[in-house]
Picture 1 (cartoon, rainbow, N blue to C red):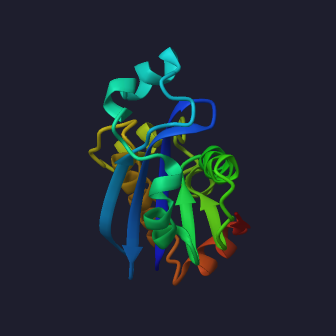
Picture 2: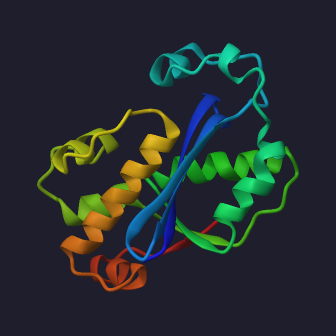
Picture 3: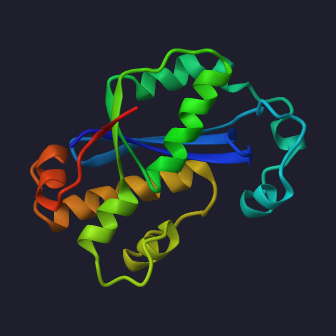
Length: 182
């Protein structure tokens, strides 16, 4: 099982201020990285968003823009399967960021770990990242992109393990979820 877990924190709307990526190889989390991003709306930070993740304008002032980070991020994302917890949100932020800087969409497929957890752990009262992580005793600093990406990766691995999936395709087929294209 090889995939990349992705998470964004946003300054406002679809303007990211942090990205986290977690690389899974052969069914194990091998590497997790996060980058603060100077958002396209800088210096504005939506107060509600800032309250959620705690990232301020001052913290991102000297950070690279998404465009400047893209060559490194693209090495992680292109030609890979990605997963995100509430993938619709994270893929929208990714697409919007690429469009904002007029960067080409890479070839990538993705699935959503919220959808996966709803199918596998139907008994949970919620399928939020916090609830599913607590159910699996995953300790993490919620709303920091690197930690959220790693928690998402572990949740996906645990879901596939619980349904005895041999691969991502096998696991998604067993529960009726299709890969989507970026």
